[in-house]
Every structure is written in C-alpha cells, then in structure tokens.
Image 1 (spheres, helix red, strand yellow):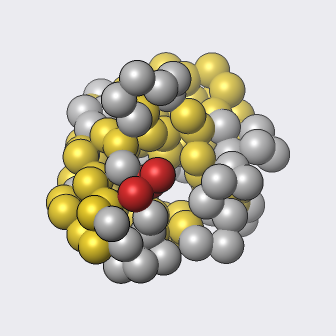
Image 2 (tube, rainbow, N blue to C red):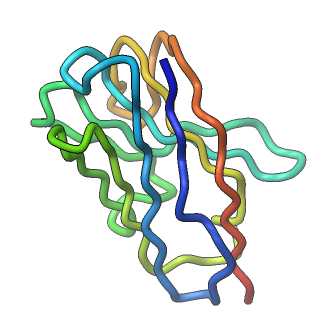
Length: 123
C-alpha cells in the first residue's frame, strides 16, 4: 500500500496550487482519504477529507471556501485544488487513507500515510 503526494512548490500569496495523491495497493472505494498539513513548530492538522463513495467532502474552517478536494477513481488519484493561498498555508502536505471522514475535515482511523509534499507561500 502506498500513497504519494506531489505538486507542492513555491507560490506567491494569492496564488494557487494543485496537489495530487496517487494511491497503489488499494482502490479508492475502500478508504476515506484525507489531506493533512504540518507547519514548522505546529501540530499536524487535518484539512480536508473525501469519502470513499466520492459523494461527500469535508473541510477545516481554515481552508473552507479556498480548497477543493476531488477524486478520479479511474486513475486511483485524489487532488486538492488550493486557491487564494497565504503564508499561513505554508506546510508539508500529506494524504492518508483511513476509516471515516469527520465533519471538521479530519480523518479518523488513519491506516496509511503518504509521503508529504512541501508547499511554501511567500508574502
């Protein structure tokens, strides 16, 4: 089982990035998938989650209205479109597979973590 996040980089405040998470070893029908981030000196934060059915998405208040998560079951991939980025969004971003999305955008019961991708937003 493997999850690989990619698409991070350096962007100016107000800009956009699209992160991808490609999974292998299981299909997206089996797990809810969450996106997390961890900034230096801060705890890891669950920011968005999509149910295995693909019919429901959840977001943390910190990203609601700016980030959109989606999935492509044919490619076994998940995406998060991040708009109106600000320096507070600077962090390492991870995708993870788990049991159940929470309304807060967090993911309960993480079974597998992917390697992260760095997002840096300059002011």
